[in-house]
Length: 185
Ligand SMILES: Nc1ncnc2c1ncn2[C@@H]1O[C@H](COP(=O)(O)OP(=O)(O)O)[C@@H](O)[C@H]1O
Ligand SMILES: [Mg+2]
Image (tube, helix red, strand yellow):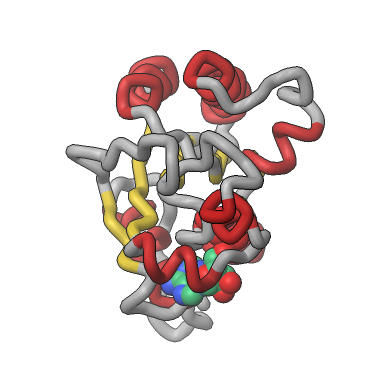
C-alpha cells in the first residue's frame, strides 16, 4: 500500500487554500492516488455544523479535521486539509497526531486577500457586519516552520500547485513522473 500523508494548507481567508487543494486533488487522482479534500467551509456544514468561531470552537473544528485526516493517512490516502487553522498550537497538535504531515503556508498579504474577497466576507468584517473574522479582528498565527510557503500573490495557481507536487515527491510520498511521460500539470 502506498504511504499516506496529510497536506495541511493554512492561511488567511482568500489566500488560495481551496483553489490549490482542488487542483492538487485532480493531479494526484490522475496519477492514480487515493485522495480526499477536507475543506473548512464544507466540514463546517457537516461534521462541524455545531461550531462557531470562538477560539475554542475553531480549535475543536481543527481537532475533528485532524482526526479524520489521521484515519485517512494511516490508510494510504493523501488527505488534503484546507482550513484557515489560525492557531499555531492546534496545527502543531495535528502534526503530532498525524505524523506524516506537511504544513503548507498559503501566504498572501492581507490587502490582496481583501481585494480578492472571494466570499465577500472581508467587506462585511470591515463594515462591522460580522465579528471575529480572521485577519480583520481575529488573529492569524503564521507557521514558524512550514514545509512549504506559497506566495500566491506572486505566482499562478499552477505554479503553487506544482510546488506542492514537488514537495510530495521530494519527501517520498509521490513517485516522480518518468521522463517521456506527460508532465504533472
Ligand atoms: N497562486 C494562487 N494560488 C491560489 N489561488 C490563487 C493564486 N493566484 C490567484 N489566486 C486566486 O485567489 C483566490 C483564492 O480563493 P480561495 O481558494 O477560495 O481561498 P481560500 O480557500 O484560502 O479562502 C481564487 O480566486 C484564486 O483564483
Ligand atoms: Mg476556502
